[in-house]
Length: 194
Image (cartoon, rainbow, N blue to C red):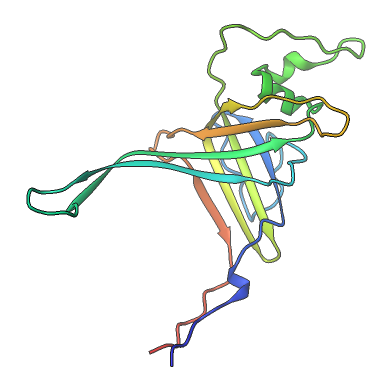
């Protein structure tokens, strides 16, 4: 008889989570997977679509003459992205990310914040920290050099929450790494099959 090993506590549902941003060069938050302190700033409420961890890879296959299957594959592209929709569009941190404006330039004067969008945006790389929570399981993603590479249209409508939908691309840091993972997960039980 086949013994199927299953452990519900090793499965994860993205029940909750959050995102934070800091200036480029900010180190990953220290300690356990908790809310980071300054200089990390919260992105705030994220839509119920949660956080989408993207994998975009391409490869080149090499099939020798006389074979119908490749005998080697070379990865030619490996891109990591994170997608989310930020709902707190009035949060200064979120406006700064959406419009590529330094936070200090969004300080209200007499209750009014004014800024202009440039026709020639410059790169706006920052550090990002994401946490996904589910009971005792938590996963952290530190992106030392990330940038919002895609922004969706924003709908302002009576029966719809306005949100900034972003794709954040992770670029290599000085060590050549794009994303650092920190996981708090239960120990996988020993396999008892034959």
